[in-house]
Image (cartoon, rainbow, N blue to C red):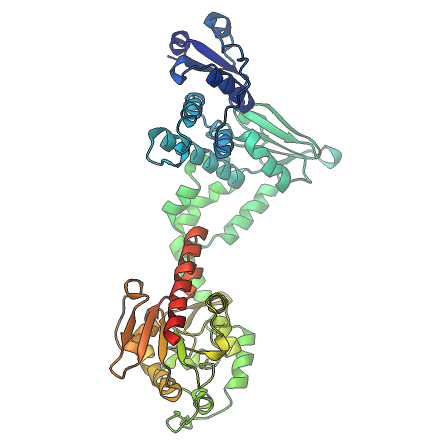
Length: 491
């Protein structure tokens, strides 16, 4: 079929290798300048015996010195696409270059068939490069001055030359060679060389370090987080035959349930020692005496002192200390979050952890002085689940929220704010006595029966949980917009 296409085409463009981008670029520039349409060009890679029989090549370079201008982004992306294994990639790239002369915004049209194919090839090459970086395993050969490391890898595309600089940066101090069926890359400590392809038999057999690697892999395997489908998506079985740890995977999967149960049984049930030391300072021996419930408190300071002995729900037993609200009693606005986190539990102050840093930054951007606001939580004790040496946040239930609402109501009655900001569903439930769909009602102001206005928005920790940087920045902008609206309502 390819030979037939070569004979039907008016012109042929000869490339010296599968990734000869410079050759493609030069040929494409001459062809486009000469007015040669994409359907009149056949692209060849080292045609060998066919070279003489074709008899037609690209036209001579035109005397016209005008510059062929295409977006810089196209050139950079085309360098990646040319590494794809589809033989039609050269023709696709030339067709796009041809169209870009009259359609300068073509790359922005996601629905265009050529653009969809172009982007799919680009992503496929990127995934293949990522897999190579993740699954190359070097084996040592030689000793002393003769020591070097060799790896065998089977990529889906022609990525070895494009990916080799990564391994130079990662393994600069090693002398190594990566063999693939298409090409090889060799680093001698000073010069990176790209050579011909090889066979798997050219790679060395296992070395002494593989047993150590298998032991390490077996020990870092976390059965509680095993998701077989997700694992096979990230580490397809096609790579297993070249991974020394792959022989362990079937047995690790089969024993995952049992291993997870054993791991859970070994999990600590008490916080780390430094948590206990802080707790000892804040929980003096009280015996079984009834703690002060704060009913007689006439100031926030007195209420905070009474809350240190709170026993209204079981959360006090595992928490380090009560984390009460903070701010002036003259504050016109109260910000209410869900509950303290690990860092707040140790410090005894609200919003000093990662979410607190986001909160502070947003207040600064909105030009609200935190020192003039009162900041508290719907629940005053840290609820968590132990995970190894870490304490992982656990959402308080309705009973715990209701039990702690007594303290929140006392804070509201003493401060008498003009506005309360409910940050998140738990805060909204504590303030309004019912579940509120925060994402649908954010930015709205709800007036309670007692006349108190409640502004609904998200909790700043929500921003921290967004993985995509662009989505994270967009959500931060929305939160800032909410807080600016709060400033307007503060008067």
